Image (cartoon, rainbow, N blue to C red; front, side, top):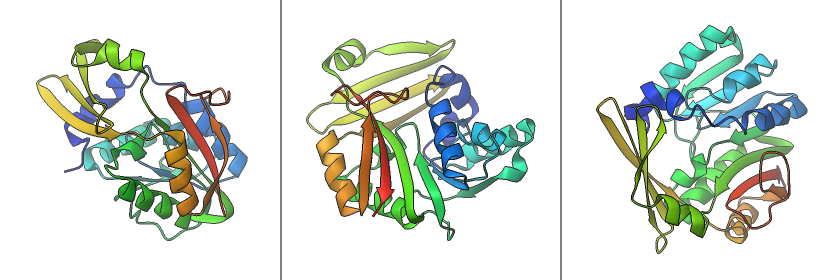
Length: 233
């Protein structure tokens, strides 16, 4: 069972308000010409709009439940022929193709608990790239304000869907719990700073072209969100 299987049925309602990244990744896909590999494809929240824009997507996820939702979404949108969904780990994606663009949206790399596991994932993404191909992903590190406002509190994110953030600044781990309709699941997100990510990218033979602070392509200024646009060296 994949990490997200317990919440696959209500993942889309839970993340309904997260739309700010969709246009960004669609633009990246269009700029690449495709095909695109999405690591952590989930329910197809990003992959389906990319496919609707005319770009083929190979999507990898470790959750059969999430992939089932993505398959249904692709069928409903009429783009099932453009989306190749595969069960697998983003540290060892079951892909032999080489592509001009690999993406890993919605902070999925933070599920890697250690720097060593993050490096494995970065190297796996690098291995999928054509010469000069790009790997684009987003992550975060929390602000003091965010920790103080959310730590240890159940908050209703969407009607009937609650989430709780438990922050551990010592281990730099967020334990995020989500519950709805009698289902409850928790998972850890393990954050790093921009300089730490840059060191890992260098070890993975990826050069950071730019680090944005938001999906409107404003430069990163030290706030919590980080969007890395990297290139194979």
